[in-house]
Image 1 (cartoon, one colour):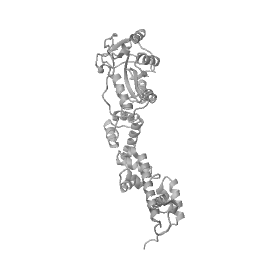
Image 2 (cartoon, helix red, strand yellow; image 1 turned 120 degrees about the horizontal axis):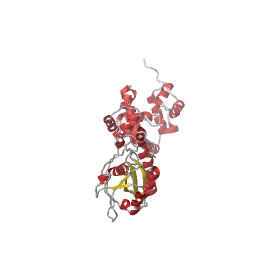
Image 3 (spheres, helix red, strand yellow; image 1 turned 180 degrees about the vertical axis):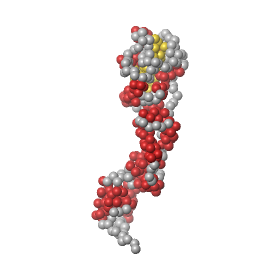
Image 4 (cartoon, helix red, strand yellow; image 1 turned 90 degrees about the horizontal axis):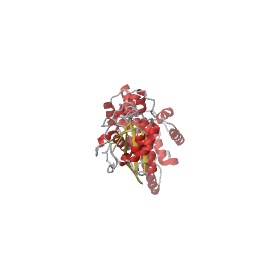
Length: 391
């Protein structure tokens, strides 16, 4: 004998719908009310479409042709707005694997209808319910947890990290995982680090100043701080023209100890300004070598006399050979790849702030450096117990 069909009055349906809007777990509420969750979603959908005209009893709403047309347009508009809101919130998941899309749907069940989210994310709703009700193994749960960490690290690094640095970050968090596995998971997640571009030489070495020998001779390993500093200048394009970035890097820990961002290319604005910051930030050691290219900003008498005053040994790259100053070039490549390429042009004021954040917060403090065995500068110095003369 079939059970008697239960009839719910409009007031009950309305209150059930209103309560479901306040609850985070619609399925649990349906169980408490003694109704099917699909029925509750049906009531919600009807209430969203008709509002106070919902639940009139048996039969369809009697509308005039004009009312029907208006109702249909309102329904299409609501659907479009709903799809827009879902798309806006889920756009990061559109190119990711299915399990992450399912997870997004689960986390937003109380906000959007499941069917709509499945349509926007191009998923089958039956597949979602199967995934939701399937018990997860410990291995699968660990994999999902690691993928969440990978995604978090990737976006917190502003998409700058590839699999080697993300692997090092995961290892520092206590996860034992190989770079190959991280690369595999990143591929499944659709995550890729920002691609690099070829470096463009901008140095002006046509001048009559003295050019010194290449004392460094591509020996980019320093045994202690303030033993070898390297410096270079690059241009950065903005909406309002070019800015010129000059950096001084200590080869020991690859820290940017001095830098200058200027509108012009004079010695005072570039090499000399960056040098003044460097000597404030890090005490000069004995027999410091300062290496640069042959640019006029480094060959000028004013800059040469400054280095001579400090007892510094000068070193310059050979003509047209950017590999002689590879570490400085590598920094500019990282900067432009991770911060500038692919982004819209911004004002000089905004760029100055972006450069400050990149150098002082990201590069010098948080970034993992391949030359330091994927450690941060602080981790490297702590491991080697270097505290004196390091700032």
